[in-house]
Image 1 (cartoon, rainbow, N blue to C red):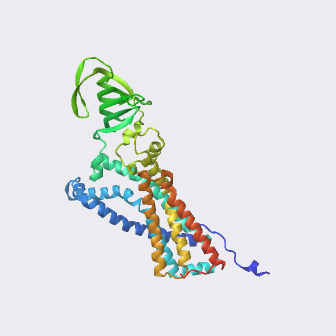
Image 2: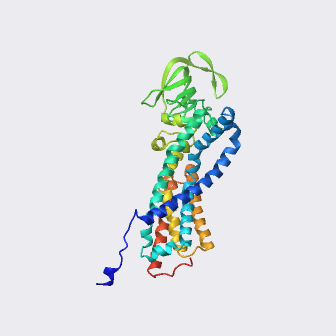
Image 3: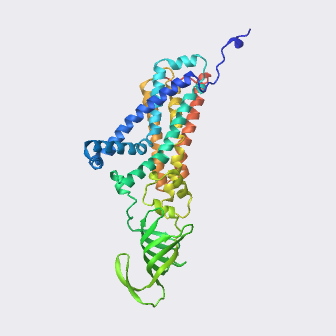
Length: 400
């Protein structure tokens, strides 16, 4: 019988004991790192508003419960941006322990290739990526919605949707609109002034009303109990207010008047709310709408960033594992460890930088959301190519 026939065959076993053992280690260490980061973030977030939050409860037990509940509500929004980096550190921690215990050498001497060792890190990335996407896209906005309804904490009070917005100016339907927004849904406009212009930009009409109601399913709004001025009109004089100054103009009263505002009513409902507090389904609608006066790039950038978070923890986990296999296959030298951690931090910093640049119009939203994941894929593929070249003797092994 030939030697090849008697040699044990090494096959890909995605749900074997080795996978379960390493997966448990990855998740355990990621949980520890996440808990530490959350404790720091919660302390920074809670400390300036601790007294206000505690005052929401009655008695000692009520104050403690209010603080605990507020901390739970803040947790999804604080964890989600940190989870990809926590995943990187947790996986790196596990890989260091794996190398120092001699387990990696034992596994590789059994004939298993590095690519056959990827099942646990892929499963960890799948689990953590799904968790990150749900927390950032759904749980975070939902918890902020509770804070706003209850006016809980600084952000809850600042973003209270039950009160009118400050007067806002915006372009709408070939004119300029000034109004305060009653968010709804459905939204209602208060203290409305609409300045209609012709194709040359000249003022043709001014409509003023205490309230405007959206005509559902259309771009039209019904202004109620107001008055209007039209260029060339000689009708009765009525005193009104333009931009905070009382003036005498020829104004004609009306009971109802319909005007077209080419603004998505959904935008009024979510106006003055940062994109990270908007659920993914609403964010997708706002990003796709062509009738958003401003912040369109912010919505689109945020949407792509949230979508990329479904794969980002997995890519960070793969990066940590690949770099560990390349530079710390048999030993864990301090320079290699520091260098790998620096690579993870650069990737984490890159995601935040791209988000800021995309939301401020310095980068295309699609590029802002997917540049870092694309770069990580290239780096990971390159590292695994180097590992395979080392195993086949084509290049010298690294110092690790």
